[in-house]
Each structure stands twice: as structure tokens, then as C-alpha cells.
Length: 242
Image (cartoon, rainbow, N blue to C red; front, side, top):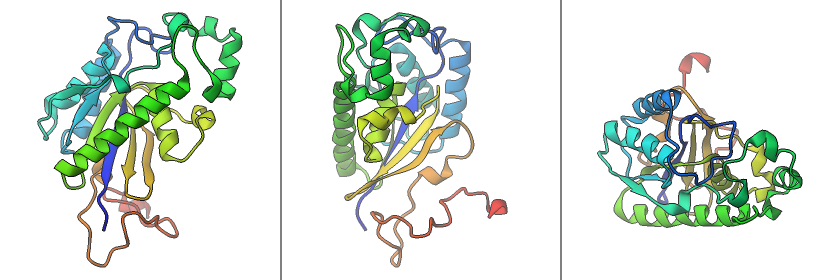
């Protein structure tokens, strides 16, 4: 059985500008009351998942969400800040209302061909994807040398999470707008030696028991193998619905 590592991608909680303004790297944007409640609820869900690491974007809204998780998590980990998981540098688009940006010609490129989108005075979405995916691969490699079947959390931003998920699914970046990452959602990805499995996407409620990998059984199929026929689900599946 090969080694596995499970990544929990967490989007930050709500702020006063979430959904209205493209915050980007604007400093001083904190979780609002809704966001703090979301972060506390998420932290409670993850409290008993022993996390090998808790990593955050440098931006306040992510660090506050990650700290809520760290404060109650059984693993007792401190938050590590890593710029590779920071928001896309939106350049001149930063701080502008989304309604206004939707009238820009570049908006259609971002929607239909994001791999070709470069923000004026900022970075391209391809560059954002490259640094974030490189960060994931580096942590996967390191944590596998320190832990057996590690589970770790990265608190980041919508476009970053979608880019990492698209990579895990083997999708071209131009398809990443088909994915969703709501505030304080979990997207869970399990990496093996030969492939990655997206276990959950945009998960905002319910048990997280199935996210912890089980010790390998002697007669079990390889952890790199997809379940033929779909399987019966992981731990925590509601048997009453079977």
C-alpha cells in the first residue's frame, strides 16, 4: 500500500466586502460577525481531525479562520503562514466592485479562458495556480516524511482553491470556473503516488469522519486505485440511506 496525504482546503469566512468587492491583497480586511461564526462552526467540525499542519494565506481573513481551527484542534498545531496560498494579485482590479468589473472586457476572458487572463498591474491566474500547486506538492512531500497518512489544512481564497482542485482533477485551468468554493467550505483532496482523489468539494456541513484515512488492510485494494462500481463510501456514511 502506498503512502497517502489528505489536504483540506478551507476558504476563509465572510467579511464585510465578500461577494461585493474584489478584496485581493487589500490589507486590514477581517472576518465580520458572520465570518467569525462560520469559522467557529468549521473549527468545531474539524476539532477531532488530527491535523499534521495548519497553513494559511498571509491575509487577515484567512489567518483568523485558520487560527479558529488551530485554537480547538486536537493536533495542537500552530498556524504557518505561506504566501504561496495568498490571493491572486489582482493589480488594478483590487478593491473595485464586482458589478463594475463585470463590465470590463477582461471579465469575459476570466470567465471563459482564465488561463489567458492577466490582471493589469498584477499576476496571471496561471501564475497563481502554479505557485499554489507548487506549495501543495512541497507540503505533501515534507509531511509524508514526518507523518503516516497525514491530514493537513490550508486556509486560502476562492480562486486559489479552485485552481488547486482543478489540478487535482486533471482539469485544464480553463475549466476551473466550473468549481465552487463558498466561505468556510472544505474541499478535501487525497494524494497518492499515482493520482489524486477529490473526496469532497465545497462542503459546508455534516460529519468529517470520512476524511481521515483508515489504516491499510492486508487484503484491501491499493490506495492508488479507484473503486470499481463506486464503492460503499467511507467512514461516517449514513447507513440508513444505503
